[in-house]
Length: 425
Length: 121
Image (cartoon, rainbow over the protein chains, first blue to last red):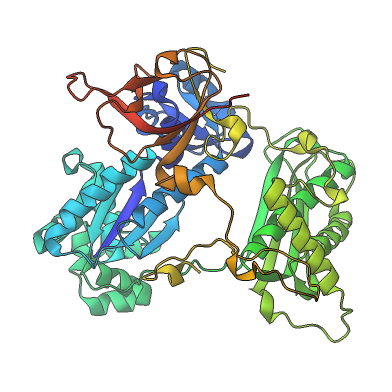
C-alpha cells in the first residue's frame, strides 16, 4: 500500500505557521519579483475572483479590498519546512519518495490492512502537530489511485483529509466520483479520445477493454488503466534522480542597461548552478546563456538572444563555467536595450567521475578543483556567497529580485527568529 | 544516496578524525582516542524536525523567569504535562503559559518549551 501525503496550500501554510493572526484569513504567495500569485490558501481560493498566475498589478485592487495578505516567496523557509515534513514521514516508513516540495509517496506495505486507516490518520495528525503544516493523505494499492484518493480526501469534508482505498467498493466509489480528465497523468488528447467512447468517469475508463486502451492510448494509457485497476505499474522511486539539466533565470529588480551589472548577475547565477552541479557530483558539457527584454512592455524595444557553448571538457568548476558564460554573454549582448532577465542553463550533465579528457586539453583541473573546494568549504562555513569570483561584484542590490513582502527566514537564520512579546521587535 | 539509508541503522555522520598535518614523526598517543567535541544539539534537541527557536522581545513573561533576548527552544511534537511551559496562540497572538492539567480552559498549543537560552553577560 502506498500513501500520498500532500501538504495543503503548502507555501501559504508555511507562512501561517508563524502568523497565528492570519488564521482563517486569505493569504497568497507571490512569485519571484512579486510578479504573480503562485499560491493561495483555501480562504483566498474561496474568493473565487482571485485568478491564479495572474500578474499582481492586474488584481492589486481585489487583493486590497478583500484584505488578502500577500507574501513574497520565501523559498528558504519552504525548503526547510518541506524537509521537516519529509523527515516526519520517515518516522512511519523506511521508504519515502519525495515527489515534489509538498508531496511524498510513503510506502505502507509493512503495516497490516487493519492498521491502514489509523496510520493514515496518525500521519496526518503527527505532521500537523510537529511542523504546523496541514496535510491530506490518500492510501491505495497503486500510486495513481493514492494520488486520486488524496484529492478525494481533501474534496469531501466528511473524509476529514484521509481516504483509504482498502476495498473494491471504495475504489469504485473513488473512480466514479472523478471525471476522466481528473485521472492523474492523463493528457488532454487522451481525455478527448476516452470521452468520445462515451466514458464519463474514471471508473468508465477503468472498465474499458484493455485492448482498446493499448491500441488508442499506447502503453502510457495502458499503464494508467492498470494502475486504476489496482495493478501497480509505477514503482516507488527511492533514489533522487540526478538532474539532466540545471538552470536558473530570474528577472532583475529593475530593467538593466548597464553591461557591467548584467555581467555580475550572470556570474552570480553561474556560481549558483555550478554549486548545484557539484552537490550532485555532476559535470556539465554545455552551457547556455540567454538575455531578454520585457516582452510584456509595449514601450520598450524588444530583443532576446541565447547562445549555447559546448565545453572542451565537461566541468563543474565555477571559474571555468563563469569564463565561458561571460564569453557567451559578450557575444549576445547588444547595447541600447533595457534588459529584464538573464539566465544560465547547464546541459549534458554526466557524473563527475566519468569525465573524459579531450586529446588537446591542457590539464589544470587539479588546481581549479582544489580552489573550488576551498571556496565551497568557506561558503558553507561562513554563509552563501561570502567568497566569490570578482566578476560577481558587490552590487547585487542594483539587480536583485524585489521581495518586498518576504517573511523572515524563521528556521535558518539566528537574526530572523520568530519573536514573542508584547511589543514586536 | 538516500536509498542506502533504507533499512540500515544510520551511523553518526560526525567525523572522528582530527585534521593534522601530513608530517612524519611520532604520531600522537591520542590517535585512537579522539572524539568529536560536545555538540549542544545532542543534548538540547530531541526531535530536530519538530524543533523551532523563538526569541523573546521584552520582559512580558518575567513571571516565568523569561526575559528580553532569551531564546526559547520549542518542541512541537511534545504534549505538555502539568507545570510545563508552553507557547500557545490566543486571539491570533503568541503567548507563554504554564500548563495546569486541572484547567478546563481550552488552549491552542503551538509547542512545548524545552529549554531557555540566556546570556549572563
